Each structure stands twice: as structure tokens, then as C-alpha cells.
Amino acid sequence: MRVCFAWLLVFVMGLSAACAPTLKDPKDRTPVDPGPPPGPEWDHCPPPIDASDAEVWNGLLEVTNGAVYCQRPQQYDDMARALLLRKQMRLMAGRYRLPTKGEDHVIDVPFCLRDEQGPIDSPTSGTASAGTQDFFMEGLSWWVRGTQPHGTEGAHLNWMTIGSEEDPYLLIDGSEPFSHELQISYCDMASCDWEDQSLFTACDVTPNTCDRFEMEDGDALSLDQYHWVGPVGGGFANITEARGTLSGQSFTVSNPAQLIMSYGHHAFTRSATVFFDTPIQGACGLFVDEATYRSTIWTVDCDGTPIDPLVVTNEVHEYQQGPCP
Image (tube, rainbow, N blue to C red; front, side):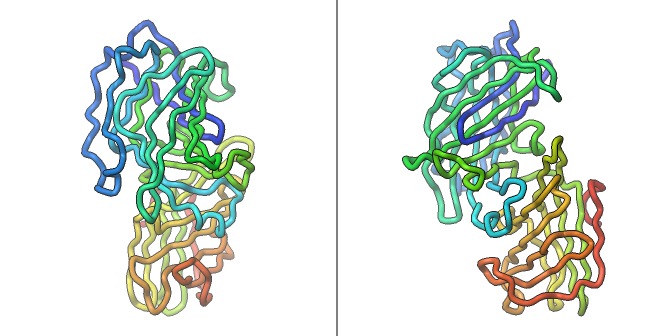
């Protein structure tokens, strides 16, 4: 059985999914094991559901319990903007029918949201359109685009999938690299200007890039990152783990909410804020101002505001060669 891994893109204007029609009815597929449910912080979310026989669409979206995504900045957003993006999103486990053609379908793929304070309102049902198109990179593909509003102030999600037109099936499990199987975007306002947009990407992905810094007095910092370079200047980066030593005290941080990154063209320039689990010598974390060969590192307070500069004595940048040693 062939599986079509597609892109899921949540924009301000729509919910979309993609993979092409097939003669095989997707409900005949054997369901995958959804895996263990996430922690109690998601108890406010609706239970998993199964695709209904009453739905006549030929497309099928299958989601496991691993489908959890973190809010992150877009390319060219600065660190001040990145520090504000603290939501997490869960795409509820289940099997959901998707259209393969037509416009203005009523659709309700269940996304569930929370922030640092706890549960927040979930997006509601929206509309979607679907069809096939010859894309530059993917060739002839099945696509679905739609919109799901969030709240009453105009905020909304868009998601989009693009996959093989031979089989309208998409499996989502929270391991999707950026721009390959799943992208999610969120708009704070109905107008959805650039500064109102943010991304949701998989919280847990495999790192492929390393930035390492040595500082005076034995201080050190290593940043494992996932880095993606796209066409026409596109790029994305996020931190997967930070390790190091400050004032003789070692630290390891892997919680996505404590690892913030902003990035520029192709994500070749990157800035990072790392918040410790507990303060070290009055510092709540570290800020790396542009991870280049002339980086500046500061201690920061618990809001991410720089306090004192640290003297960088050596730095190593290993692009797409795996995590830091």
C-alpha cells in the first residue's frame, strides 16, 4: 500500500489538504496505531474520532497522537516577535475524510490549542476547496485548501496538503520536517498582514545543524537545530536542544517553549534565546545575537531582555551535518 506524505499548511485563509483521487475507498485502509495520548495538558481537547461512512469524500487524513506543533516565527521576524509566540497546537488523533475536488466544502478538522496559561479556544469549522494541479516542485498533485476561524476577533488557521495525485491519503504523526509533509500557519487578525502571521511546526524534529560557542571562564553553549533551505530565498530554523555551562553550572534545555529562534534569508542568519530551567547566577537564560562568525552572546532576564555580554573566544557552525557532538 502506498502512503502519500503531503504538506499541511495552515494560513490565515484556509484549511487545505492534498493527495489525488483513487478508485480505492480510503475507509478500507487498516487504521494505524495512534500511539499513547499526550500529557494531561491536552485533556481539554475532544476525543479521537473516526471517518464516518456518511462522508462521501474520497480523501483520507489519518492523524496519530504524536501530532503536536509549536508556534514559531516566520522568516525575517525579529527576536522580539519570536518571544511572543508561545502557543502549542494539537491535531486530534483520528481519521478524517477530505474532498478531492470542488469548492466551498464545509470542513472541520479538529485542531486544539493551548498557551503558557493553559487551554484556549479551539478553531471551528470552515470551508475548503480541492482539486489537482501541476506544481513546479511536486508535479501533478492533489491539493485541498480551506479556512477555519479561531475566536471572534478574526484570527484563523490555514492548512494545505500537497501530495501524489495517485492516492488521496495523508498520515500525520508530528514528525514532519518543515515544508515536506506538514506546515501550519496562524493569523492573529482577519486582515492577516505579514506581522500578524506565525507558523506552527512539529515540536519534535531531528536536528541537522550545530552552532557551538566557547566563552571566557569556561562558559560554553551548543545549539542543536533543524534547518531548512527552500527556493526563492525561503528558509526555516528552530532549536531542538541547547547544552552548555555558565558560571561553572551546566545546563541542558529541550523544552520547545524555552528554545526560541528567529532567522533571516534562507535562515543562514539566526538568533537564539535559551531559557534555563532555573536561573543561574541571576540569569534566566542566554541570547545569541546572530549565529554567524561574529556572534554576540548575552545573559538575559526572564523576559528575554539582555543583561550582560559574554566574551566569545571561539565559535563553530556546522551546517546540516547533524547535531552538536
